[in-house]
Amino acid sequence: MEANTPTPDAQENQPKKEKAGRKGLLYVVIGIIAVIVLSVILIGVLGPKPEVVDLSLSGSEIEYGQGVTINVTCENKGIYPAKKAIPIYVNDGVAFENELKLKGKEVLTETFDLDDLTEGSYTVSVGDLSRSFTVLSEASLSVDFSNAPEFFIADVPSEIGFSITNSGGSTGNTSLDILVNDTVLDTREYSVGGHKTVADTFVFDGSADESINFKVGDAEFEAKVYESSKLKNANKLMNNTVKGYGYFMFNNNSDQDIVVYLTEYKNESTAVAAISILAGQAVKISSFPHGSYTMFIQTGEYWVDELGAFAKDQIIAKSKTEFEFENNVSKAYGGTYTYWTINFWGDLANSDYYILVPNPPALVN
Image (cartoon, rainbow, N blue to C red; front, side, top):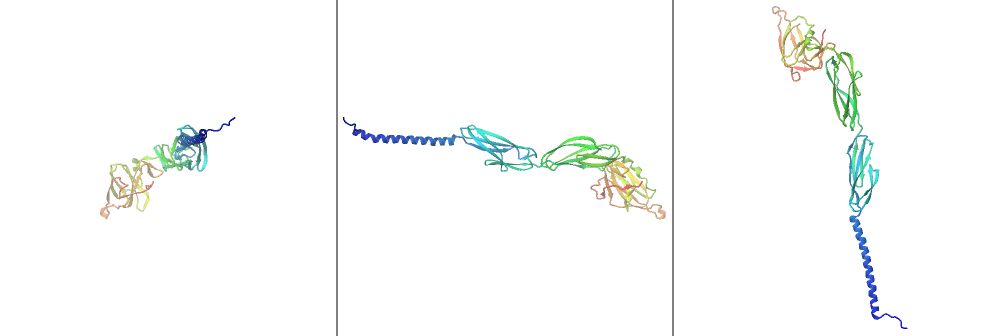
C-alpha cells in the first residue's frame, strides 16, 4: 500500500495558503481597530457632552429676609442621552447637589432657591462660572416731626409736617396712627425704600386748650392752642402813650397789613405802642413823648394776647436807625418840631434798612 505524499504542487501552495490566512487575520484586526477608533471618534463627536453653559441669579440686591433664585443651564451637545452631576457652591460651601438627565441635544435649566437670607455678600459658583449678590441690611424706620409749631391758633387750620426715615438698606413697610391727645386722627400706610425718607403732613384745627399732644409713631410733641384776634384790631393796643410831641407819617406801600411797634431805644424788649396800618394806607402817628425810639415792623394775621405777639405768616423787622421825637411844647419857648415821613415797601428780606429779628417786643398793658 502506498503512502499519500504531497505532490510537488501541493507543497508549493501550502505556504501561500498560510500567508493568505495571516493576511486575512491582519485585515480583520485592522478592521476591528478601525471600528474601535471610528467608534471612539463618533462617540467623541456625537456622544454625550453635558456641560454647564449658564449661571444666573434672580437679583444682585436682595431684601433682608427674602431669598434668591439660582438658575443653572446645562446643554448636551451630543446626540446620546447624558447625565450631569451639578454641585452648587455658595461661599465655598455646597448648598445644592443635583444630577441632571439630558436627552441628546437637549438644553435644560434647573432652579434652586436660597431662602431667609441674612445681611451680607454671597458668591454662587458652578464649575467655572460664578455670580455674586448682596443681601441688604434690615429696614429700620424712625419718625420725626419736620414742622412742629410752638403753638396753634384756635379754629385756624395749621399744617404739621413729619417724615419717616429708613436707615436700613431694605424697603420698610409700616402703618402709622396720627394721634391727637391719644385720639386717632388718621391711619396711613407707608413703604420707604432703603436709606430713603418719605415726607407727609396733616392739618390740625382745634379749639383753645391748655396743651395738645401730637404723636406719630415714636415721635411726639406738645403745643398750646391760643385764642386770638385779627390784625385790624391791633390799634386798640396803643393804650400806653401819652399826649406828646413827636409826629411821623407812615406810608404802607406794600400789599400786606402791618403793625408798627415803637419801643424805648434803650429797652427794646417792651413796646410803648403798636399801631396797625393796612395795606396801601397812610397813617399819621403822633402823641409820643419826646425821646429816642426803636421801630419794629411786623406782618401777621392773628394777635395772641397771652404771647404778646402775632402768629401765622409773620415777618418781623427792626429799623437800623434810631428815631428821635423831641419836645414841641412851643416854639416861643425854644421847642423844636420833629416830623418824619417813612415809606414801607414790605421788602424786609432784601432791605438794607431793616434787620429781621426772631420775636416782636412785648406790649405794655
